Length: 377
Image (cartoon, rainbow, N blue to C red):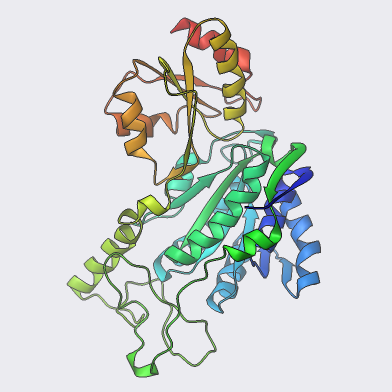
């Protein structure tokens, strides 16, 4: 794939990625530390005939993006943790109606107002279940500046493939980090765009939710000649509300199955010096950069440490986690929370002895803090 070199910030790269991936609509509300996503895309979209709107609040921001997506347009909203909390009800609507949408969350300290200008990874558990009810969330997590771009591009393709919201987690450090990134060219991105499926047969044969149990709905753009119903209620194959027992059961099971049956299309992770590792460090986001530096120091001192970095956080790469935890004695999760992903590593591995190095005061974890913790093990 042809690439280009760019010096920018993570927030700016995410916005540029959205435009290159074919996004034509953005709606949101300014919130630290994600506001630069809106600043950049509001400048870029009008140049290509797109629309960017600052709404009156976070709720309106996601509602407008869902509405635009219903019309067939690739849509984006961006926010931070408190904004996700406000968007939760409408995110559940998008899950139930199967409307594709990309949501960028630049994480900061919480809960509530928390530490607005400081770094955190406190929204990992929230990203797994951002709204009530049963469904299977898809969450990607950038680990460097280049991935702020590439994971946003991937999120748009996954949203259209699985017809649901896809979350891209950045954190304050990555969002505001300014540096060099090697990213695909806009032409390369455009050549890899995979748009949502549509139906082109007779209108009377169109049943948007009448699909196989491991596939997403096929929603033609509104105002294009095909009639169907959008509702947050349990619905039949045409989208109309129902309480029929089997229809309701099959609908909710399909929201799970359409993701679980195709997880190989979603899984993504990095293995760094894991071939001969005797200590496994699990880290993601900006923390993984500190972990790599720590591993270099540990290796120089004869300690064989390696990094397993989940890029797709949800659904988790559980099989890959278990593969390593079955053969490596010491496992350390390093997170800017109090163990939100360690819980998943314990579940995937079946082990309760997973160690943790956590920080929740808004400051990053340094490489030497990781080195010292590994030596304690």
